Every structure is written in C-alpha cells, then in structure tokens.
Amino acid sequence: MKRLMVRLQGPALCAAAAVLAGVAAPSAAAAAVAHPPAHQHHREATVLYTGQAHIDPLGGMQISGLYASLNDANGNPVVGRLIQFYAQDGTLLAMARTNADGKVYTTAPANIGTQAVSNILAGGYAVFHGDDHYTASNGSFGISPVGTAKFGFY
Image (cartoon, rainbow, N blue to C red; front, side, top):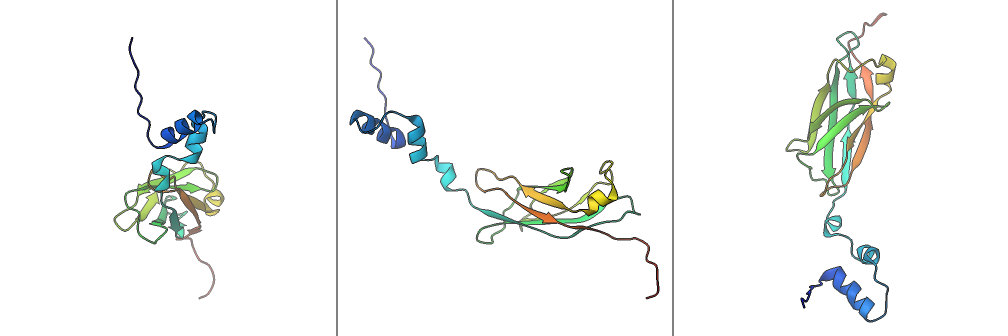
C-alpha cells in the first residue's frame, strides 16, 4: 500500500483547515478570492502622458511628433515598455519602447494606409497595455497639419 503525502501552505492550508473543521466547503475559488496571487499585489499604477503630433499633407503624409511619457504613480519613469499609437478609428500608426527617461518619440511611416486626412486629423490615442509589474494606461493626442500653404496678408 502506498501513501500520498501532501504539504499544504498558504491559502491551501487555510482552506484545508477550514474544511476539516467543518467551517467551509472546499472551494479553490474561495481560496483564490481570499488570497490573490502574489504578483497582483505588486502591480504599480501608471500614467501615460501624450503630446501634440503633426502631419504634413504636402510632405508624404508623415506623422511626426508622436510623443508619450510613461510614469508610475510616484512620477518615476517606466523604462523599456511598449507604447502603441493609434488613429481614432483604431488603425495602428506606430509603436516604440520607452527610453531611460520613460519617454517615446517616434513618427508614423508614410504608408499609413488609405486613411482620409480628416480621419487622421481627428487625433489618436496612445496605449500601454500593462504587464506583470505595471497596470495599463492610455492617453489621447491631437494631430495638427503643418506645411500647408498660407494665404492672406501677414
């Protein structure tokens, strides 16, 4: 005859003790609710700041000045995280990782698809999707035209 020995620790020990004492029904879900995984305790909130971008309709539809700054709740830069920039209709414009200062400076390639200029001028949003250490955050930005001809007297 073989014996099975199980060592219970943490939430499993609490749940097993409660079941043996007749206090609670065995439930992995109850144990999980009472004691969430350790990685959830340490996720830090983030804030994503964005800046005004620009497009030159006469210069190849290049979007320049895509900027974002990712910080934790204490204002410290969050380094090496992927930031994605989207047009308001959800079209991915560009993506880049934050630098040592938690900042991203990038441009959208000239081949941004069949977007109408008015669609692009509606602005966009930047997203950090979060990870095991930091929560997700996002911010919106405007896109203004530059390089257009000006008429009138100045």
